[in-house]
Amino acid sequence: MKPYVICHMCTSIDGRILANRWPKLAGKKSPGDLFESTADSFRIPAWLVGTTTMREFAGRNARLEARRRRIERTDHLADTRARSFAIGADAKGVLRFQKPDVDGDHVVLLVSGRVSNDYLAHLQEAGVSYLFCGKDRVDVKVALDKIRRLLGIRRLMLEGGGTFNGELLHAGLVDEISQVVAPVVDGGRKITTIFDIPGEPPRKAAALLRLQSNRRLPGGAIWLRYRVARRSGAR
Ligand SMILES: NC(=O)c1ccc[n+]([C@@H]2O[C@H](COP(=O)([O-])OP(=O)(O)OC[C@H]3O[C@@H](n4cnc5c(N)ncnc54)[C@H](OP(=O)(O)O)[C@@H]3O)[C@@H](O)[C@H]2O)c1
Image (cartoon, rainbow, N blue to C red; front, top):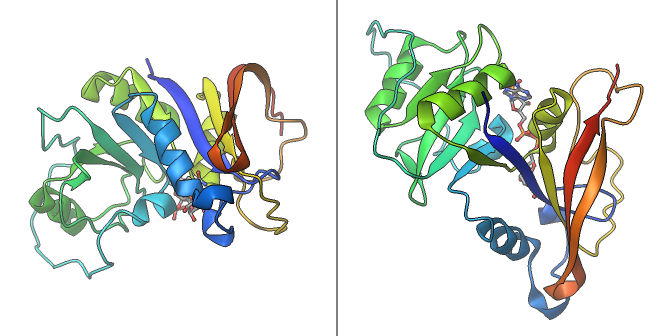
């Protein structure tokens, strides 16, 4: 069981995603505005990101208090009435949310067996939910199954970064790609791209897509939507 997954990202024309390296677009539009307005148009109240991206929404990296409490190592749903969700991977327990929401979206962290009891106690005190998704890493198949079954999410926005997107694409879990292409060439050889599959590069292209729509946006950007027709990506 899994939700329908739409990977929504804003890229340069060479597929890179670190928009803070780019200038303002014509008409003073920022790539961030274009990303947000197109994302909102889906009206899907649940988004999922990797640890590095989620860190941008978490509190400052405070030290964990030693609580010496034994905590059941089971899934924890802190807000069963939540209707919108900010979901992030945190296999090692490095994020420090001090509050249970990001702009009203309830925070749910995907953790692994590596996280400490002190970390779980911290999340419970902050009112944050967590789901165990693997022994020492986040198994993305397990994660999507739990997101569908335990949170009741049928449609999900996958919103970066490139490493986490790459993992989900490679696992065959992405159904659609929504790409806002800003009229910028980044050109940085090692700069993160929309899909950076972890590990050895796949021997073949990772997926074949079918174009669904294309639209001009303000600032000279283009919005492309694709269905994932077939995943290849043999290592
Ligand atoms: N332009 C856009 O539309 C857009 C959108 C989103 C983000 N971004 C940018 O993208 C950048 C971050 O991208 P990123 O690729 O470096 O990081 P990321 O994909 O956000 O996070 C990657 C990290 O997630 C952790 N992780 C946990 N479980 C994982 C799993 N199963 N598979 C893969 N990773 C897993 C890993 O850290 P551990 O190994 O330490 O656990 C990994 O290093 C940020 O600068 C952000 O601003 C841009």
